[in-house]
Amino acid sequence: MNPIDDFISATLKERENNDSIRSLKPESSLIDFCSNDYLGFARSPELKAAFEKEIGKHPDYFLGSTGSRLLSGNNEFTEDLESEIAGFHNSEASLLFNSGYDANIGIFASLPQRGDTIICDQFVHASIIDGVRLSHATRYVFKHNDLNSLEEKLKLAKGRIYIAIETVYSMDGDEAPLQEICALAEQYNAAVIADEAHAIGVFGRQGRGLADQLGLNSRIFARIVTFGKALGVHGAAVIGSMQLRTYLINYARSFIYTTASPILNHLAVKVSYAFLQNRDHQSKLNERIEAFKSGLDPLINIISSRSAIHALLVPGNVEVREKAKSLQSSGFDVRPILSPTVPQGAERLRISLHNHNSIAEILNLSNTLNQIL
Ligand SMILES: Cc1ncc(COP(=O)(O)O)c(C=O)c1O
Image 1: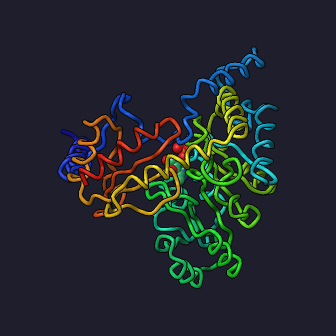
Image 2 (image 1 turned 90 degrees about the horizontal axis):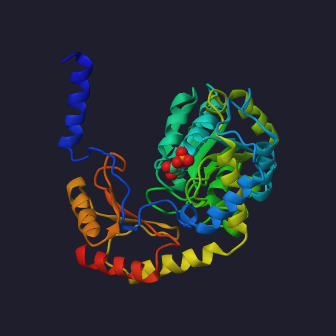
Image 3 (image 1 turned 45 degrees about the vertical axis):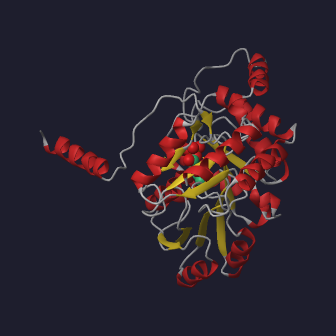
């Protein structure tokens, strides 16, 4: 074997030995308790019909965008969509990215400069971490949702200061203390960049997110919204000032050096935002969240959450895998979250609830969890 194959084989072996090897699985026919399709939009026949109707209004659409937004990949429809999204989120401007991953890489790698400081919550998403790694700014990490720890780092910070958080954490389902973080940010003249990936559709007026629910839109420098979760489609946007939008168009490499997503995707985003606003999806989801929580034995080790994400701690990769297998054999699509995705000892069953889960299915899941945990 050549040295590269040796390296690959040894590294994969290590994962196998730790019981943390990842592999792709085909789609599942079990009851969905693992997708991010919280409102059931991705599978909604009504939304699909609205999408097809929208396509009918653009009979000459191109299958591909044919280039970067800065070259041949831009069009009026996309720019109008960006204005609409900005308006919905009560902001001056928005800029689309091909994914939430790209949006976070784009803003964090381009905006903070050498001599600046980025202070991240310990549990921010990998896309934020990767964006920060690409930046030349100094990086500090504060303990998850711990305001004292954040303030300690703020005291050490130099240059322009950025605070990177999620409003709802993807693996824990808990919320950032947003009000207090904004107050600290103002005290230290720092800019908050908040990833709302798991809050959109779930919190705020018509699903505008947690910042909106708390009346904090104008106190947050930039929000990242993603379309691949509650909105059921694909892509993302950075929401902020017109000046920030212009800056990202000029400097965010994950915006500049990539083929724009096709208009079909933008049509889907448009109809999905419209669908979000034409009905109260949140009450239905909240009813399901309440049913799940009230059905669970209070002794179960669960991270407190008001969101669609519920983390039940089962330490150990082998142990959590076994519990997930047992749930799967009872018909529930529940996946284990292993270390190193979460810290060792904090392995968990990550259960997400959806509007396409019936209350009976949810109570059945709670009962089964009460028996096996
Ligand atoms: C908090 C958070 N931010 C960003 C992303 C990335 O978004 P996308 O899936 O659109 O790339 C995810 C999704 O995994 C996420 O959970």
